[in-house]
Each structure stands twice: as C-alpha cells, then as structure tokens.
Length: 140
Ligand SMILES: [Zn+2]
Image (cartoon, rainbow, N blue to C red; front, side, top):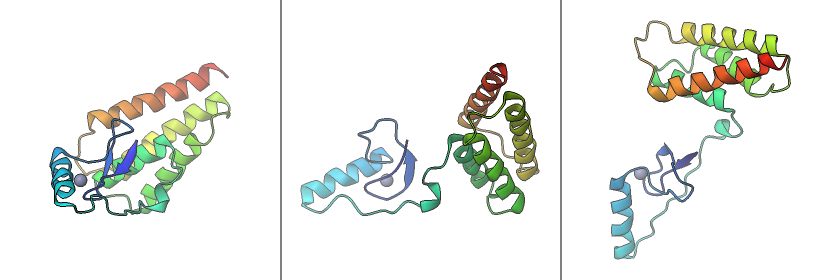
C-alpha cells in the first residue's frame, strides 16, 4: 500500500495500514514535534495519475522511473499495455498470454541499455503477473 509520509511527504510502501512515517528518522522527528507542541502532519497531495492504477501498470511505472525512462513514447506504450492487462480479467486466456509477452518485450525495449538490474520486488511482481496470465490461459 502506497502512502505519503506524514513528516516529509515522501511516498513509500506502507507495510501496515497504521504506518505513518517513511523511516525511523521521520518517526523520531514526529515525536520531537509532538513534544514541542508543533503539528506533525503536512498536507500532501499524491499525483492524481496514480489513482486507480493497476498492479502491473504500477510495477511498470516504477521500473521505468527507476531507470529514468518513464517519459519516452515506448514507456507510454508499455504502460498502456500494462493497463490493458490489468483491466482485462475476463479476456480469453491465449490473448491474455500474448498481451503479457508483448508487454514483457516492450518493457525490455523501453529499459534497454540502462544496465539496471531488476530488484527482487520487481521480479516478484513479474512472477505474479506471469502466474496470473498462465492462470487465465488454463481457464480458456
Ligand atoms: Zn518521511
């Protein structure tokens, strides 16, 4: 679950719903502010573009952002493909698998030459998406 840190506003992955700070440093800063009688939270607006984004699209965006390629035309096409996969749970299995392969190839092209290793988290997301694609293929 993505949320913005109450102290510094940085977007981070919250492990628990009650999580409020991005780091122990911000937690400490918040408790110092409470002691000093200052307001802890600041109002932070998250980018509207992230509202309602599916998990594959989100993972794709993070991947592209990480290598600084999120602004290219190829990146946009890759994101559109990911959105199509996220939003099409009822489509026929073979076309879901084909779309997934297309997305993988497109993402590889969009990030080509950046020399950035995939993080364990991204690999996990890829596996999840692959499992989902295979599951819908079996159902066809
Ligand atoms: Zn913070």
